[in-house]
Length: 282
Ligand code: COA
Ligand code: AMP
Image (cartoon, rainbow, N blue to C red; front, top):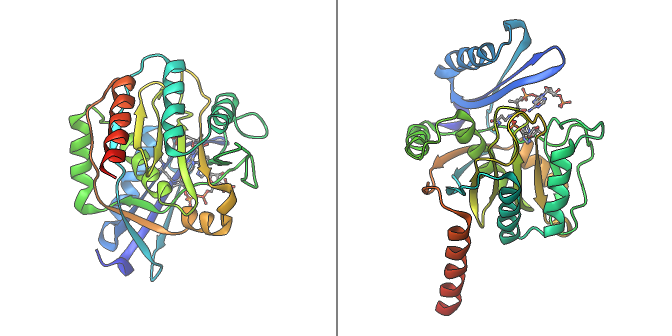
């Protein structure tokens, strides 16, 4: 796709004051109308009326577009949320986040990370070592936007994920968001679970570990959720980080590996083995 003809199409929908649905695409001119209809239908299926849906269509014009390969995907099968959170913490530590910072993030997300005690409208930015929160607005946080799968790979990623039983649209959308975020300047890793009470899955993501999914990072019925972007606080250029996450357009043009679910102990022992072999090879 020639990028000067690409458009960012972003939908958000509310019931009363509550944000209930949001999604976005990057599409060519001829797909804009169809995409707007699809996104509006999606909000209506979530119980919104047409006047509760806002769609922004923005030509990307000459702004640079980044093309990325998706993070590799793996699921760690842990049915218990406490064991799953502790496995998520171990994965984040492999990515370079301190145990203290992970613990702080889990506590914030499970209690409601917004100043008011509810869910934030975006992600926390946390120092990966100290766990200090660095985002200016603790109600809003930071939202990653302007990303999508390219037309060339959308079907293949959907098929690969479906072959692993991952058919929910949230998985491919979260993987796209996590791929964009993992490439941000100063980014170390991400932790997320949804605020949707019916959606218990969550993930950690980083360039080092890929996208590691957990079927249960919270109890069913729990409406608390959120995201933490862990960053290298010492070297951080906040303007560059925010500019990239919020403004730079990203298309995912290649898919990564999508592996079958494994038990966490198998996952961690494989990584230890890989570390030993690569030290030996050095
Ligand atoms: N949660 C709560 N409120 C949201 C929201 C979200 N995710 N996104 C937008 N809003 C509300 C806020 O009130 C926001 O005002 P604020 O900036 O003061 O917080 C207002 O809508 C306007 O938001 P804006 O950023 O201008 O909307 P947009 O049209 O540019 O983009 C989205 C809206 C939802 C497409 C975008 O924010 C987003 O989240 N994109 C990623 C979607 C996705 O694929 N997520 C993966 C899910 S697994
Ligand atoms: P969701 O997976 O959409 O349920 O979002 C989970 C949490 O991530 C929300 O409660 C917000 O705190 C945060 N969030 C929502 N949208 C974004 C976004 N675009 N970028 C970063 N964080 C987000």
